Amino acid sequence: MSNVTEKGLVELREQFDTMHEQLFGHSAPLEEVEVVNYRARATAVVPKVEHHPADVRTSKPIDSAKIGERDVCFDAAVGVEKCRIYDRDLLEPGHSIQGPAIIEQLDSTSVVYPGQNAVVDPYYNLVIQVG
Image 1 (cartoon, rainbow, N blue to C red):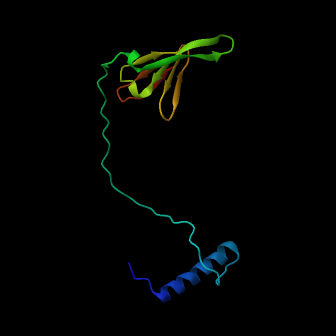
Image 2: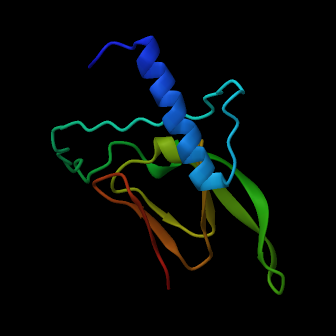
Image 3: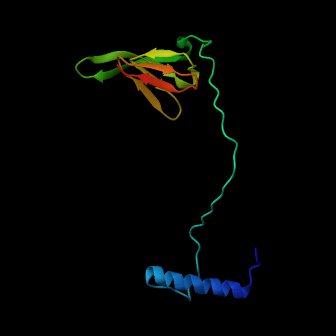
């Protein structure tokens, strides 16, 4: 990288004013330049992530993840139904939840409708089976 010189700054300013004129149809060579945005690009080599499935046999019963119940209306024709509420962080591989249920976590809420089943797979994914 070269050192910044007074001459280099003058040339850079002239190039800026020329490009600004070409792009926007005007320039202001007597005004101060204000830098509004900076952009940077970086590239890195990272090791490939290895996903290892957990043991499918859960050590805790599903009720250990249950945090309550509430009345929920899934269908106006059916009305309000009791709905179990689960903490997503407490679910383990092998846990299976029959709908109706709500699974809450910090950044989202998963709804398991009546007739659906949610299963936590060996990678901790929540797989909702419909029908």
